[in-house]
Length: 412
Image (cartoon, rainbow, N blue to C red):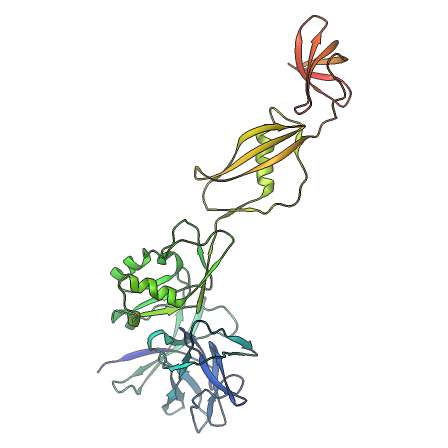
């Protein structure tokens, strides 16, 4: 006898929180129209299996007497659990829609305006039915209580019913746990997180998702090239057909693949942020020895630079005089590779130079703790750097800086 094991969430009386892991949508009848949901909590009301809002699943599944619990397996088979028996009441039918049809939120449901194709859970891209946690601790963390129901070769639930508590440990990128029975048959499951993040210049499938497959298939799929990653600050959105196309191109059959996660994948490139203040600090430090009194000009806010991950170095590449200002070019290097640069404008924050060549000035010469003042004549003025060249009465020429006290300060 072939024993199939389905893992079902142990709900409260007459309740089963479920979700669709795939492209399919649950269907409910509400106010004479069909509405849809990716997850819901099934319960019982007036002889029907209904949502948490009391709307029957569509097509309707009837259970005449109130059961102790409602449970749903991977293929959407709904089982009514009574104290003395278990009855398979029916099977969920999900709807598949083209990629260009967008769901519209309507209360606890979704409305999709277009022609849907009925499908059974477990078939192709329709997806499978998994437990859903409507509130409380996030899925994939902590301990959860499950019931294992064993089915006989005719698909009927057997008498064995074991309650177990398992620790649902988060995987590398998602909290999904693979279907071992499906994988043993050569199936492949690829679980995507709500948002995929890429840090490098290449994009492989293993960078985006968790892969559940045979060791040989997993080794190939993890390295499967998925094209160029998006640019920094511009996330890119893909549908599942893009994923399937890449897998088909690698020789895999779509019928053996299950895509787990959001219907549309958002991929963003992450790294590190280099702020304008970081560029300014690097420039200030780079010119400090030659232009100690210079400060960045105040300007409009400049957006941060989004750079790849790695060792960041900000290096002053060029300093050029422009009138009474300086243009300082600072380049950003990641792991030794130049990725970008910015040019900043600096102005002299010291007192304005009010002397000109030929003027008599007081020269203050300082050597360690000793300070001597003498008379001198201005020979040359650099208004950008603030340096003043003077000639002492002894004929010696020195270069110093103009100070707020109206003297030329020379440090030896």
